[in-house]
Amino acid sequence: MMNQILSTRRTFIKTAGLATLGTLAGSSVFPHILRKNEKEKLGVALVGLGYYSTSILAPALQMTQHVELKGIVTGSPDKIPVWQEKYKIEDKNIYNYENMHQVANNPDIDIVYIVLPPALHAQYAIIGANAGKHVWCEKPMEISVEKCQSMIDACNKNKVKLSIGYRLQHEPNTQTIIGYAKKKPYGKIVKLIAEAGYFDGRSGHWKQIKALGGGAMYDMGVYPLNAARYTVGEEPIAVTARHDNARKDIYHEVDETTIFQLEFPSGAIANCKTSLGMSMNTLHVDCAKGWYELIPFQGYSGVKGQTSKGILLNATQPNQQARQMDDDAQAIKNDTAVIAPGEEGLADIRVVEAIYRSAAAGARVTI
Image (cartoon, rainbow, N blue to C red; front, side, top):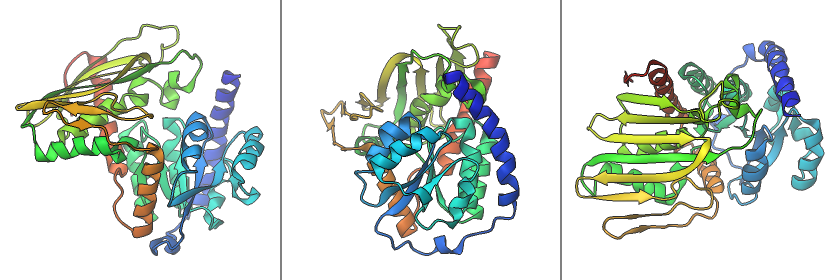
């Protein structure tokens, strides 16, 4: 069944790209989105109805104050009645990948949220931007710096906001850690450990297919990578990386586990690890005058930590995705900067590309 789905998706990508090219080529800026949006709740259409949309985002959208689920974009007609019954989505707010560009004519939809395999993000984010809709996109942003930049350019051209789904940057304990990078309450950051992973027992999934953006580094790897960047508050200047594939029968196209070390301008070193073959969820930071940590640092059910001074980092957040989407919706309504813009996603992918180059060469690579 999974192979049939993937085959259908590949065929669709080719046809959908051709079908929308002519329609979008002459697209222009949509003046109505330049005005402060006066809706109490902005309308979002989820693009892709896989696990994350179904089990995480759609339920979170029932808890939001500034945005609501109004539409869906799917290539699976059998899912439509299920979503309509559960979320009361009107017929006029349902699209497939071939007619998604028609969302331009729908005032119910203010935002498209791209929840597809990474290698499809740019294609459909650009369709959404050219339709005059703000774009939210799941991480990783895409699979190349070039594609990330194309998304940024499309959103800038159409004067819509682009936000990447780094839920943790909206989470209160993580925001404390981000603040430490600036204030240095424990002195200069010397080194840190950031590890994120889980055991995925599936085979034939898109996460094991290179062309769709599979692999541990693209999937879970952005968690320790992004954590290292926001914890130090700097951009890494070099990386040394290697891959470790224990299940070569499943992970023969992509990495099952990636170990990488990042070097920062200040001299801080980040030792990072990510995997689809083992469970990990740790962020520990050693500084000149103490330490602090978040364990777990990226769990859906909560982020908790402590410091060498006995401070507990245990602020609660009922739903991380709801807070993320409310923050991003308010940025649209108030025309203010989003917390995690496209440039943040691009910065991660620039490092990811260097990580793969380093692993392939078996050598340190400057960024």
